[in-house]
Image (cartoon, rainbow, N blue to C red; front, side):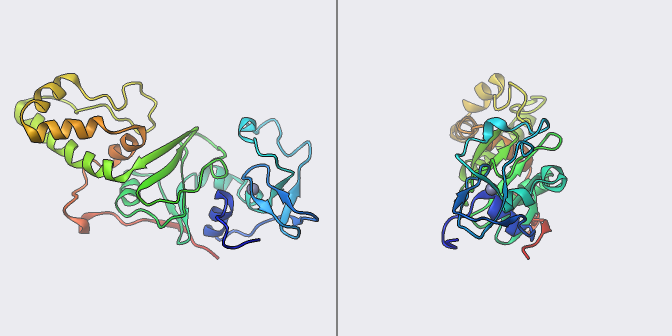
Length: 253
Ligand SMILES: [Zn+2]
């Protein structure tokens, strides 16, 4: 394999997790039907049989590669551990890190992984996440798979959103507003996610430049940034020593 080529998400994650690829050497050059890896003869693969994608496999629509094998990376990650136990995580050359709690998301946003990396956030039961997720090449626009959605998280918008959120919350207290400025919700299942309260926007947005700027910064957020902001909105941006550190789950071999 050309080691300078960008890895597929399965190749990257499998190495980061220190897991060995499985299978037997391919007799010809071939393509993985799941992650799309271009494989040379001799790399470890599994033939595709009528049992490869059985009844319980519910990502048939995602298998759209013109593949002829299941690669040894995808197969090695096809286990309960990676479909469930580690399914809120991100993987880079430094290892696999937790992406489950608010603290984990804070670490991910404030000290993002070195690209390339793969980030997944599964809120369901066992689910194929890794091979369906694009490899992220940026530490500014972070790609995260949340169940069936691909989120793009613009860090600069999130950081601006934190200051904006905190300003609006502070002003709401002073002005006697109850509740929150908006309705972010981490699984993004609520239809009102990302909606800024009209009463809050009107009052604080017209108080002066700072209020107007804060409301505009919140209105600029898309789903990915709301997902992040929900977890990071209480962070002290000016006090980096208070920031949580990434928590490593697995190390490369
Ligand atoms: Zn594969």
